[in-house]
Amino acid sequence: MVHVDLHSVTQPVGIMRIMAAILTCMCFILVATAGYVSSPYWAWCMFTWCFCFFFTLCILILEFTTLSTKVPFAWDDFTAAFAMLAGLLCLSASIIYPIFFTCSICHRAIGASVVSWVCFAVYAGEVVITRLRPSGQTSGFLSTLPGIMKMLETFFACLIFMSLETGQYSGSPGLQWCVAVYSLCFIFALLISLLTLGQLTLRFPFSFDKLVIVYNVLAAVMYMTAMVIWPLYSFRNNKRPSNCSSPCPWDKLLVVTFMTIFNAIVYMLDSIYSVRLVFCVSRE
Image (cartoon, rainbow, N blue to C red; front, side):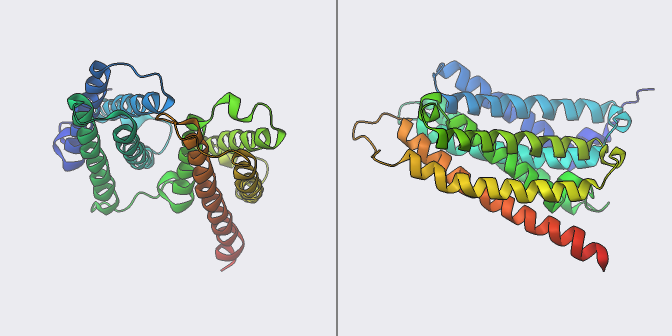
């Protein structure tokens, strides 16, 4: 039976979620009225604000109606992880949108950029309050260090996919290998997160933790190859054009390079931590 829980929207976390829903909606409306721009970066920013608004509103509704107690996964883990992910998404949109789509007379774009930064601060505040609340820290997978690294891996992969263009890699086997690495690692990182969040890992007939270790090590090695191959093949005899418009295709190659390096570092740290967790800590 559904009950109404007024405390869920009057406590500090609930108030922050209401603010986040309003602010993300404001960003979406301001940018939509400013006009459509044919750019994957514009689409990413719009997706970010829509995604954050929709799921924040869903969380508010589910907690207000107490339906959150009936979901088949760890609800506190999910909300804590979503706040972290939404913060990352808003941070990326707050950086990307002003760089590519604002000007001195673009008042709506400037307003959307400012509101997006405020929205990032609200989500960051929610993360702080959630982690420091008196009832204790959330102990679910997505709010632990391995879970956070899995979110970072999928987040950086999304930024890579946003910057990729088919013409950049269609004629090069080396770059096609890099795209395959990005795609496979993204799919498996997302799958591991979903299986763990849904508490389905215990149904495997073998040790899921050791399977994750094998995946992490393999993904780290694959990303290390991409970290070398992508800039080698992308920038060989390919200098930045002097008349390159914004966002420039050459700049997108640079974004993919940096995101590849960042993700390779995260995968290496994830591998080291998972090996230590399973083979060292578990034997103590």
